[in-house]
Image (cartoon, rainbow, N blue to C red; front, side, top):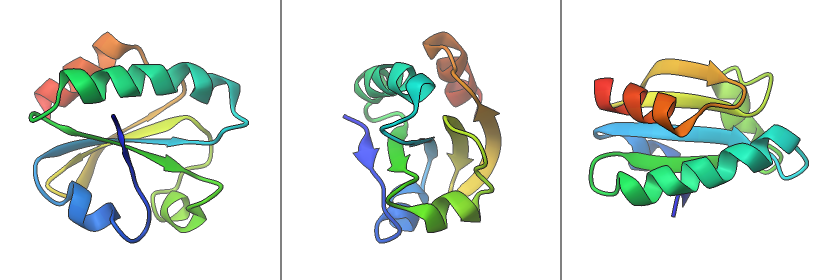
Length: 102
């Protein structure tokens, strides 16, 4: 399962290693297609990368902090620093490649 991230647990969750964070909302059509892919990655990459999700309606501060204007937006972090930002629906293979190259 992807980790539900909030402003309270965000920094400590992503501070070490590779993390992929999905910014989404329940009313967003493409987000509903992205979420199962994110959940699959969380299962497949357990122990290799942290996969998290942020509901932008519940965590607007985090969305603003990373300049999220459109959703879904996926941001790849390495040791707490953003290294890649993808806007729009992403395939599982594309995400796996980016995670393994981070």
